[in-house]
Length: 118
Image 1 (spheres, rainbow, N blue to C red):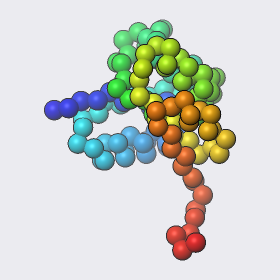
Image 2 (image 1 turned 90 degrees about the vertical axis):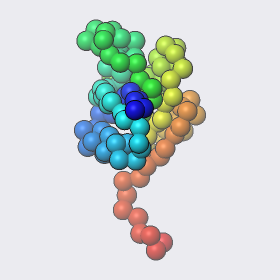
Image 3 (image 1 turned 90 degrees about the horizontal axis):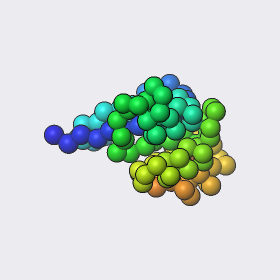
């Protein structure tokens, strides 16, 4: 059985729920999920500081670009300084191209209700 450690760095409980739901149902890889709600927690998790001293090392990180306490750019810097982990930035914000350029993957999502007919 293949096992992957997934870290979700997302302040929205609803977005964490949906991301985990999609990942659990879209892959045959068995995933263990950890999540933090702000950039400060994310850095502490990745550097195994404080309450996160025994945190698992993630195989992949899903990162919201706009977080409380530290933004996505600061979290990316910490990730890149700690070790080379794959990072996918998922955001609904329009102005996140700088964050996306530093990530391994970047996905802009839209919460707008758009008509398929155009």
